[in-house]
Image 1 (cartoon, rainbow, N blue to C red):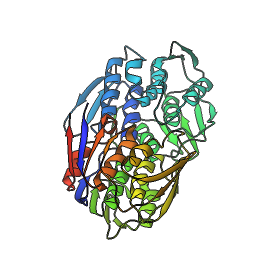
Image 2 (image 1 turned 45 degrees about the vertical axis):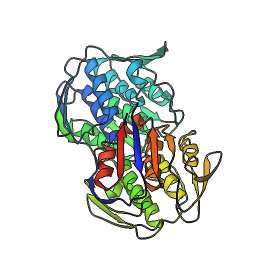
Image 3 (image 1 turned 60 degrees about the vertical axis):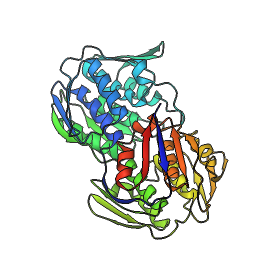
Image 4 (image 1 turned 120 degrees about the vertical axis):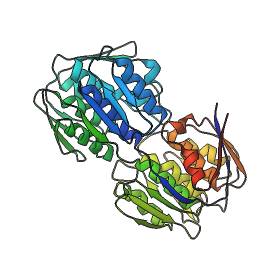
Length: 417
């Protein structure tokens, strides 16, 4: 099993390019199932979850061509096996995103239930409820969702909770449904807008993406197109937090500052000097950061995927901060690992109280999920001594070449077996 070894204590300085967004790339890859033509996707990040999704689509019958320039071409002319087996789904919950497109295009789908998740429950009942409203017959047997529909029909669907993958799944299914579908209480995330832009370029009729109500007028068929995946706002935020925590100065290119208003506001509150343009962000720190209290909430509020990184920053900030997690019920598992590095944190329910100390102690720690892994990397960068992070396969699910990018910023970081 691979590990990261980090010699902490050095400020990050330099320039790096931000990769394509994992959470945008995965649903766009699934959109290829909606047409027999070729879908060409650029700015696809080299991540384990992307590799898993491509393997899943290939075993369904899609032809896949990749090159070294982060471009993937998918042609799903012959979908011979509309099945998502447990062996693949258990490693990547986003595999549920093939359900809607498969059902709309082929009239059937056999998808393994995702199973457990380290950070909490992510029920798929909203996906099932929405597809049933569109006329699908769905049964659950032996851990699989069996879905059948000769022709999906447009429907008015009110989602009980805000769900990003649920919104994406139903939006894709509705593109080929007969009539008009209205999704109410839809998620607002930028990744949904990115998917909608790709689907519209394929011939779909969609309005309202990024708002509470999305309207999709079904069409008979979709065609191929070329789409460029949006930049990863969470990768952007992670590097910005690392820059603040280490007292550095970094310049990020090929990113969208307007997607990070909540994060940039909190970093400014911490004392960062931030300048930005259409596709770049420059950050400089000249003093020890100040503590920042925050509460996670759906976009455009503060993202749950940035909570763990800010936890590490608060560990060495001046003052006391409170962080409240409202999205996932088990997303404070990194606290125990940070406490191994002498962090002063107390947890009560879904709220953590962090009292900043001058410096963290290096230690051997273990990653529990993707964003917790990022928080431990940041903690290792600011700790005195050598930090060893185990189970870093979580990192490879969501951060492209993270040790290479950090090395380019001057970090002393090494991957080892």
